[in-house]
Image 1 (cartoon, rainbow, N blue to C red):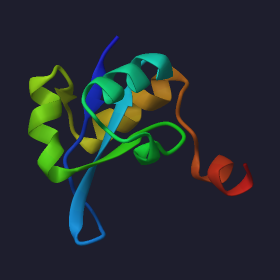
Image 2 (spheres, one colour; image 1 turned 90 degrees about the vertical axis):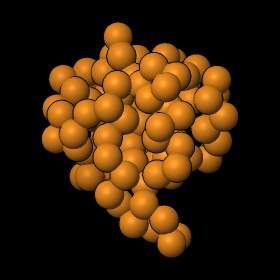
Image 3 (tube, rainbow, N blue to C red; image 1 turned 135 degrees about the vertical axis):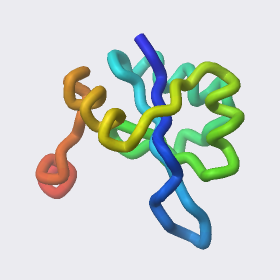
Length: 90
């Protein structure tokens, strides 16, 4: 089980954002996020959106830094991935 964080490349609200995911368990993800003061409102179905300035702190706390492609592959393999289609229809 691992918590993964990708590169902050997604612009929004005047900042760059990264994604924080678990490769196996949403409970693990929520516990890690809560312990690192990631606000619950940052959760988006299968990941947390985290600002660029939080990434070093999350890595220091144990999140593994991965590429965006590796993060998506791990999320799909875990069975936790919510697809764009599911987001539109659910």
